[in-house]
Structure formats: C-alpha cells, structure tokens
Amino acid sequence: MVHGMLKAPQAPFSRKNRVAGVRRLFIMGAMQVPNTAFLDSRDFTRIARAIGFIDANFRAQPRLAELAAAAGLSAFHFNRLFHKWAGITPKQYLAFVTGREASSALAGESSVLDAAYAVGLSGPSRLHDLIVTLDAVTPGELKGRGRGISIRYGFSDTPFGRALIATTARGLCHLAFVEPGEEQKELDALQDRWREAEVDRDDSQACNLAMRIWSPLDRLTVPLRLAVAGTNFQLKVWQALLDLGARGPTSYSAVAEAIGHPRSLRAVGGAVGANPVAWLIPCHNVLRKDGALGGYHWGEDRKRAMLAWRSLRAPRHEPEVRVPAVRHAT
Image 1 (cartoon, rainbow, N blue to C red):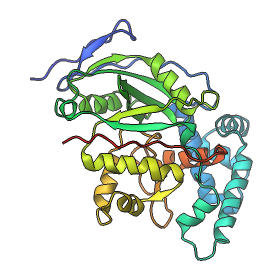
Image 2: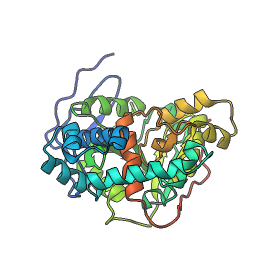
Image 3: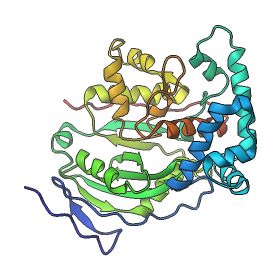
C-alpha cells in the first residue's frame, strides 16, 4: 500500500516517524558547523572545479585569474575561499601539483600508482586521525530492514559539501554527500536501506559528528564505531578498504587480492560503489591500476578534492586502524 507523504515536522529534533514503503521525510535547513574548512555544497563545487582545472592544466602554470575564472569567482574571493578550505593558496597548490608530477616522472619504471604513493598523494597517514571500528548489523536486523532500530540522522556541512549523517545506538551507519537540492534523494536512499526503522532528525548530532570526523581540533582516542548493513562479500570489501585505504592509494585488484577473490574485480567494484559510509570507509582511495582516479559514487571531482585535501593535511604519524572481525550476516 502506498502511503501519503509525511507533513513537515514542527519540532525538527524530536519528531519520530516509522519509515515504510515510499513514505518520505521533508527536509529543513541544516545547522552550520563553525569550522573554517567546512563548506556548503555550492562553495565546495567551486573548489572541486578549480582543483580539476589545476590538475588538468598545471603544465601551463595558469595565473590566479584563470584559476578563479574556472571556479566562477573573482581572484580575491577565490583566493580567500581556497585558503580557507585547503590551508594554502591556489598558487601554492599549483606548485604542489607541479612538484608531485616532477617526482612521479623521476620514479622511473615504477607504476603510476606506486609513484603517486611515493610522492604523497594521500600517502601513509593515520586514517582521519581517528580509530575506526567496523561492525555489521545482526542477521535479524538485516532481514527485518531495520525493524526495532532507532536511527538519528541529520545534515551538516563538511570539507566536501553538505552531508547526510545517520547513526544507530551501535554506531554510525550512513554518511553520504549531498548535491544542492538533492537532500530528499539522499534521505530516500537512507530510508530504502532501513525502511522499517524508526527515524529521528537531529542536525545537532550530525554537526557534532562532522566536527569529530574532520575537525583538527577534535581528535579523540575513543574509537568511532561503524554499524553497517551489507552482504558478507560487501563487508569483506569494506573491511579491506579500512585496512588498505588507510595506508594510501590502493587498487581494485589489491582489494580483490586482500579478500581472497583476485578474479572478482567487477564484484569488488560493485561493493566499493555500495559503500554506505563515505570518507570513513575510504573508497575514495581506490584508484585504477594505472593511477587514474576511476569512478566514485559521489562524483569524480569530489574524489579528486578528497585526495588533495587529505594529502595537504596529512598527519605526521602512522595509521592506527582497528578492524576487528566483522560479525557477518548469514
């Protein structure tokens, strides 16, 4: 039976709704996060466009005015926005890309992927300066599509535009980036995964989680728990991404080897694309074997920007990623 759409809640942080079929929750404005690196989706799109332009045209050493034009801003406003996001100026990033390319060229016969790893393209670093643990929902929860589970979700700005972040009592279950005007589409995707769950909007919690994930001032030693729903094969792939992706760029073939299915590249690619927790399960670190970016569920421009942002802000210490045995659904 098809239900009518729910009315917009009067109190955004307390309304509870049981999700079933095609019932939908309406969207309200998200709380802004007081972090200088956090951008709304419009400004992030400008940054991503500029990074793509620099990566494609660095050999011509474009001037600041050209970079600003690619972003659709004046030189003054673009320079200020880019520095706010990256911590360096656009010209400094241009020099970074130029130097990275020169180092890759000196790598001789090494593969492009190995060269990128060697010169710091999202090279070895602690995974987001967080300890991340992965757990699976129980078989009963998976079969029941979330029946009996309470989910708190909300929207927040991040360094990569607006995001939908959702949690259960056992951990973070969903993190998806949201294009301008597509909040309802992303919320529908969350509801489809957990269609029998009870949901409660909480933008304040989403903002606090975003601060914990991305803010350099909020590095905690308490593990950030992920509680995800997936098939046994998907869980194995996501667990491998936490291990391999935390060390730097990896490839689909490396992930396939890590889970013991070296010939299942297509299935591995499907599981990577089905990742429900962007950034924390680092599917953005999976490159093609020749070093090309490859696809990304939330857009190639965002993937490029994520790699750039992490390489520019790489912490100084080694990874500490705890990936306990995942309780698989049967």
